[in-house]
Length: 306
Ligand SMILES: C[S@@+](CC[C@H](N)C(=O)[O-])C[C@H]1O[C@@H](n2cnc3c(N)ncnc32)[C@H](O)[C@@H]1O
Image 1 (tube, rainbow, N blue to C red):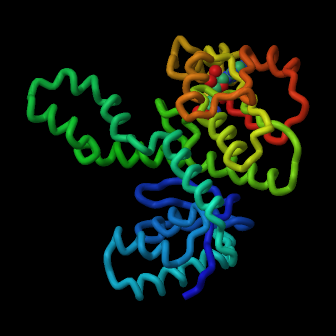
Image 2 (cartoon, rainbow, N blue to C red; image 1 turned 30 degrees about the vertical axis):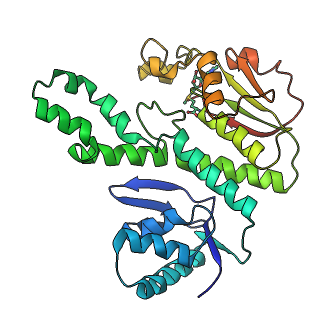
């Protein structure tokens, strides 16, 4: 059995269609549709994993002959390698590296709220729930809303992957893919010794900025700073003709969920144990706050203002 450790390439773009993940093959106009076991394998190599690790997960999920599953998995990973969708490491990661990966894996899922997603669905249906007089139905809803509304639940999970939720109460709305992307950018600039701080312009509940600080701390780069810039009162009035014509208004009057005060964002950082003297908040409209910010040098800039 090969001891290679396989991992997903960071430049790959994903989407979701029904139960399938659709990934773009780098450097080509082609797409691959990953369903069932193929999707599970893809998800299992978020961090370097060897075939044995992937196979044990598949056996639990689908059952079947482990020998055959191992053969099929190795062959599928080789196909993905040929089209640059995954890469292979020969080296075994050290214990510190493994712990960091476990921490970041869990943190990403907590920030998009993949830890308790069913409660979001419950909140979304609470209006209906409160009007429901039938006690049995109400209990069914509370006991297992995932099965009662299975389609909506699947859409919710997919939105946490792709970050395309219409309304999100998770600490970040960006979705796992964008968290992976920032993680790979940070790993690259740490490895290449690129000096400077991280800044996110448009933090909302703060999840992505929290993740930026976690990356710095967990990689031993805690002397860097994270700058969290936001009005902390939502989006500005639309100005552009195209927005006005489309009736595009994302201000607090129409979308209060996009307006999160700086005190709440600090509280979110604190909940993850990541509020420290290297986290700075730049309050106000970008055109007023960013130009005069006392930032020495930036290594990573993320703009997320809609
Ligand atoms: C899409 S949300 C950011 C999502 C966030 N990055 C996350 O991790 O979930 C956009 C944010 O940009 C802020 N914003 C938009 N335009 C702004 C501007 N001109 N000045 C300051 N903040 C702005 C809004 O207040 C809002 O919090």
